[in-house]
Length: 251
Length: 181
Image (tube, rainbow over all chains, first blue to last red; front, side, top):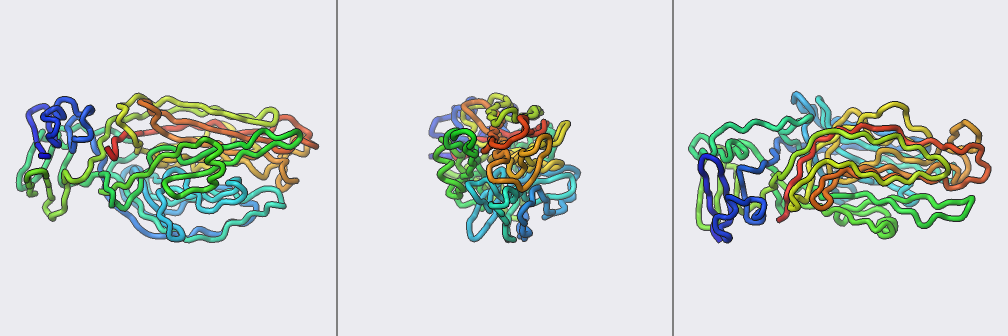
């Protein structure tokens, strides 16, 4: 297998040449051989933040959301963020709402998430520990360690106008695709040894075990699965749930 | 900013020597970008059950796309939920990927006409969840809403309308990626 770099005034491509030059003119049909193509785009990575947050205990009767600033990012707008957390030694992607404490088939739960606004990047929690007195659920305080990745892309996103050289490899710069790749920046990439797990699809299930008999009706249950991290496996199985698969990426 | 080409490999490094591009890595190709908004209508539980499965079209993409990145923003429209709780954060951008809960139901009971109480008898409350997921189905990028609320015990009830979720506007910026090819 060889690697080819091809460029003219209208296209630039880096690809495995086992299919000849076909990836130049038909990149989507040869994505498995493609390393870079000027007709595609690449998401820039900018900053990695690590740390931990101690979430407070949540007493019976409490419900809501809370945001914990983990970085004053100093940008003009909210950056695209994604991340991973570690709880009790488990490495878990921050994909959607990630439940970390649950009870009674998921009806009560504390979930965490990552988010951003124009000032801060946050680790957040969403919790419900409220219900009939016989189910006086409480959540203990828990330490959450996180690694959050920030992209150079900010929200609302405005796609850039790429106007640099189609290819410029010099001592001063390395640019391909009019700036879609610039060696002075970093980009997310798939990496089996990467630190970050990104989810590829659905993580939540919703399941009801039959209607029940009046005046008693069966409560819905909901579960979660992302890779090997799972809550309420019975509900996930009953719902015919097809979870997304996480993949490791790095930058 | 040196670059190096050798049989089977092409490497670019920046001025600090950091590997900026290496054909031994697999790139995350962005195959599509979508921005816009949609509105999830207010969901009312009339009777003893609310069961919703709704799909909001985002766009079409190459069938090779298999992962979404991006962010979305939730804005509540109109009335606050009744009978269920809003558990999604407003005013921040959330990453696309995985499933987010918009509302959860547990712990508000309906044993007295016109009054939503808390801490009542087991099963007399509205139990359920309203979920939102951005995902790729075939060659379509969609957002799917799934909501199921059940009033698990009807004996002794004094009313027939049990509340439900608010309406939400979802603003999104979604990147469809090809990963792990």
